[in-house]
Image 1: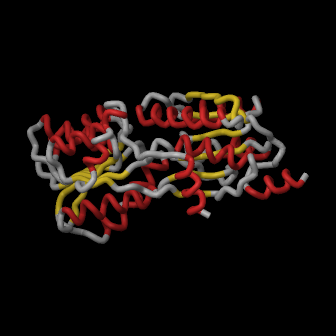
Image 2 (image 1 turned 180 degrees about the vertical axis):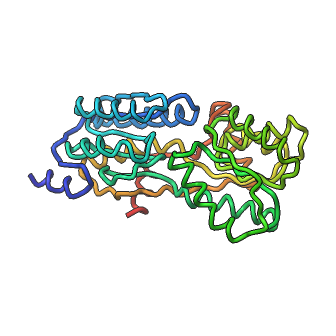
Length: 331
């Protein structure tokens, strides 16, 4: 009874009745992008550590193939199977609310990371600060341009919280600098090919640009390829830790800035799920600091490029000591 009471108070959705080894469910919204494959790889790596410690016995994986309604059905199937925890990147910020409330009411730990839901009926949300992401990128570019210039803005898919929040984060800096003119914006999947196609069209329509506010790494790589194919001079550009972008950054001699959404957020979600089920006090929101990549340290990332897929992301190292420190810093 004492353990149940302690666990119930420690984190939302935890009733203290579940005992290890636990079954974890990974409700993937889609598995095709390399970023998602790498993220799933970190989950699998962490689960192997947890299995070795006798804390987890199974990882159940579903793939909604980009369909938020299918993801809801798959979460419901996990609830019906009575998994102990659900790890979730949400395909919609609002649609899963009811099914997540059902999971929470049944003592299932729900760990939501990357693309977040609006409901608080989860155990914990894990994310970098996407608004800060957009603000920092915009301020770097504005400073690089001396507060004057014509720019393109490259966004991820509309309606996805990570994409929308990054763009919203840039608003204040752009509003404070009326000398920055936004010529056009895009919304594409976080993949090189659609970004390259979109930027190619924009370059034909706008022969003079001074900078690119790109809010995704594959988007930046697509932009560089589009500019290179048209023989355009490179311009200051923001981005993310996509290997192809970082390599093109060096190859083309760009001046750039980037940060990252670490793929190990997936491993961190698995780690937090088990800690919560064991009764540990877990904050409702766990903020992961944003690392900065710029001209001063891009070589450090590229030195490890061979450890990552050619179309993947060079993310920072992680271990459970790092996870413990981040949780402590979020309390």
